[in-house]
Length: 449
Image 1 (cartoon, rainbow, N blue to C red):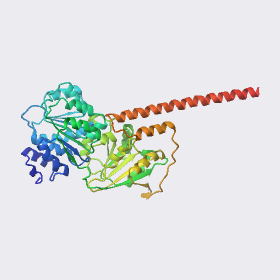
Image 2: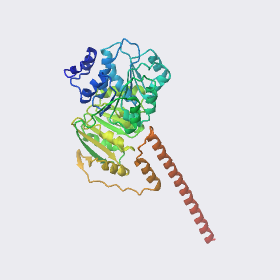
Image 3: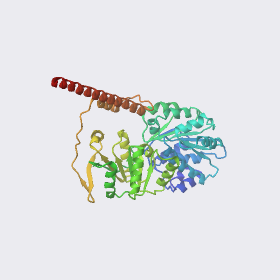
Image 4: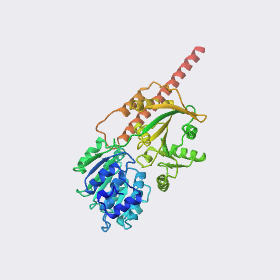
């Protein structure tokens, strides 16, 4: 606590820090808190788990005026899970300021009830971009007196195509609005938004300041087994503090979680097929460290502050290899060693080679008879690409400096269009082959007659 006193915080802020059990500010808190107390516009670049949430929550409780029954702070997060997690952290403030009103605005909750809660006025509104826009457009609450707007996980907000939505919300707020933008990275495409709203902004880039840990990337061949079967084979060979298991789809995540439960593993799951209530309960269990195994999809888990992940397991490789980098980076933090296991098939050869070109060093191992053994580097046979597959590779690998919001959805639409053309070409080729065989049969019949 003594290190926080240098910020000259008021009693509620110091009590909030004490309740959270903080003794020393993290690097980003040391830099951001004094700037936020001066109401400076801030661009904060820092990895998940660096303490950035409390870097802006502590100044909020210092500055909030509960005697004014009006909205003063809006916080945006790109996913429901991130918004819920932020809301859980913010609600600790009410233990110090019982009169403080915080409303969560996320998908999965009743829209009419949300509007009613907001109409009763609140001091802090935390939500996903779409729901925040709903509240503003419904004129459920005045935003013309908002003092602070915080955009958390701004890089993910852009990638998910929400930047225009945030622009629509921010455009209704005062010109003298104090804005803080945080993310693991700040893409170049965010610069237009930053130039529009963040005048005289201070950039705090701590992306390289984290003490590097050692991550061992291990490839495990599935061979004849499914991902789930191979997962069951290797789990006895690890002893995790927290193991985060990534599936490539919501259905696969749900099926994997059910399978592990049937084998008596104490697991938690987090994905889009769960109800809002189930996801909220899952997040609470994660915060309480109730389970050693968490099965999740990339979007559900990205950005979540999950302490002490020692192991990551990928059930195959994601189609977007940037997600693999995010997966691997969830372990090996703060100087600790981490292990990232990737279960793969021969069809993953191209993706593995691309990751190697990015500098990822893999070792090939297999768990058998109670021991991990180094295996020979498998060089899967890669089939020659046809014209359609070459076209898809061009789309995925092209570099467009003027990327617009939602570009990933557009890219996927282009890929799906090429796949449809390929299927049509295959059908047409099949029809031609059948027609050719029929003509040959007729010729043989004529010769025999």
